[in-house]
Image (cartoon, rainbow, N blue to C red):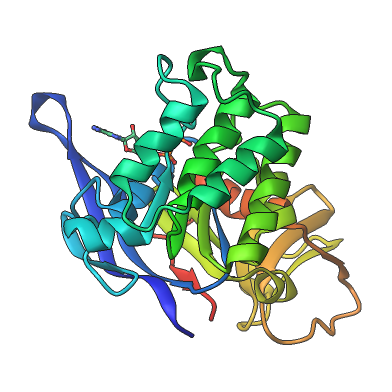
Length: 302
Ligand SMILES: Nc1ncnc2c1ncn2[C@@H]1O[C@H](COP(=O)(O)OP(=O)(O)OP(=O)(O)O)[C@@H](O)[C@H]1O
């Protein structure tokens, strides 16, 4: 696997008031594959923006290393040209028109493809003379996506681009993204806490909870190795050793576990159901919330 992002023991600590420090990202070892759409999933405050800012070079690591498209993030014009970035809330310049955004993009980006930019603006039906501040949220997001794509990056990074859009605008934005990925064969890293959106577009996923990557891998592999088990009440220490418990809940008579295992579940006492990506991410979040183990394990599937 060729990785567009390779992080080793990556960590970022922020200084807080009164000299306190807080790890926003810890022990992150992660490989994001080339030519794929990778979803970075996690709740508010998990560390998604921190990881993304490290990928695009807006932040420097406190510990560890990160390589992006074979170089150091943000190091020089050639590196910057390789990575497109659509920041949280898809910022644009309110006082500039759509056409002025494209001219700015052409000036700032050596690999700028004006045909891509103009073609998308035309297809979207955006008025080139309209100021960005007068566009709807969905249109602004599409303009920001257009700028990111016309730059012809090797890796396009999007931080919660659809969070503030209504369901229809979200769907249109993600469809446009998927079309562009198929057409231009770029790698994409996309963060969101709206997991159902990512489910539609991602073929690789990393779940980030409470500043740590809890699971990462191809969506199909990750889903194939996680199961929900329901059955008569059983304590965790009575389960087979090859079942890794992600989350557990019990009533007086019944237990429900989300487990990870590569082995088939043969015990007839369990009713076994498959998980959606959302179920799986929620199970890892529940485990973190319950703080079941003092130091959760890193689970990276390849
Ligand atoms: N500049 C900063 N200074 C201090 N703490 C910060 C700073 N930026 C982020 N943090 C803290 O680091 C943690 C991770 O924040 P981050 O923005 O990376 O999370 P996120 O997953 O992107 O959240 P959201 O989905 O809400 O955008 C949070 O606890 C946040 O309060």
